[in-house]
Length: 104
Image (cartoon, helix red, strand yellow):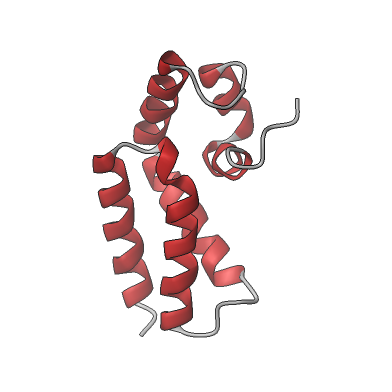
């Protein structure tokens, strides 16, 4: 099954098989039940999501210092924000900021 581009990176970061098992069909926009299932999966795999985003940031050719890492991470958060709760988005932002700050 091919996932729509806006959701595919999130599925990859959380684990594609588990994502499909929990969220089910993937057609955008997500139904209320699908969004709830996704947010529950994000809570369960939050550390994996943080680690994956940090690894993506570090591996990006566009990242060459902490400032460019912050910019890259902000772009990724903007892309993922429609699928996260406000609380999840805030926690993710804080965790990424802390991890990137360690690069200074």
